[in-house]
Length: 336
Image (cartoon, rainbow, N blue to C red; front, side, top):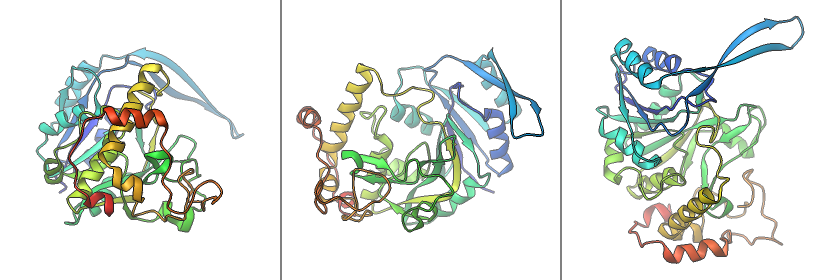
């Protein structure tokens, strides 16, 4: 039987198409012995209850939606009584993704941790086995999944350090049925990083690297975590057949206010200052002949970027890097 804690930081976001109850039942059916839900309660709790009305002989299906109010705390109490594997720990302070997950891990008892965002929906019911198959290997420290947008295009298929200046997801917007560069979107492989929207890691590795860096409250904390994992000499693996939907930023919203943009830029500067070598020399899992300006592994336009040339950071970010505190890192993750 799989012995693994699940850290699902649910907040009853309005976008969820898979109720937490269904997710929990599916995980229990897979043999999970403990499920730990962490919650930060940073949004309202209006949800949408969807009901199929009629399906005509044509291709049109009418969906009727009506809002209702739900008390998340009452639900958490009920779900723990119904499923003894579930333990809920509640985060009551300001939103900090790193701190929230570190807090949840403190309650964990399993050998493996699964970090799963509240705005995800299962597609492949065996995604746990797919990820665990890699994570059990001694040389592997973290495993990521293939994530799709609601329109079945790719949201995440691994992370390349240097995309857009710092780091970015590969093959964004490519339909799941389309061919990717050497079919890489569909191939299990090592990457420098994966997103923690759905990421499995050994508890021993998590403890060894000190968990998530809490000075990265929202952005790049998962990329930083993977870099620290690689500093231990462990691999970060992308598992394409662990497949889920990810309705990105549905619960917290986009980075579209002056305050959020300023915070995002500070976190870019912190990451860039902490891991300068890999940004300068290039991601060891990415061909230097390929562009950093797009996520589709296209060849560089040599009129715009030379072979192996790093993406030029915005001058404002460089100024913020001067203000960012010095942090100790090991060079192994940056060199590959």
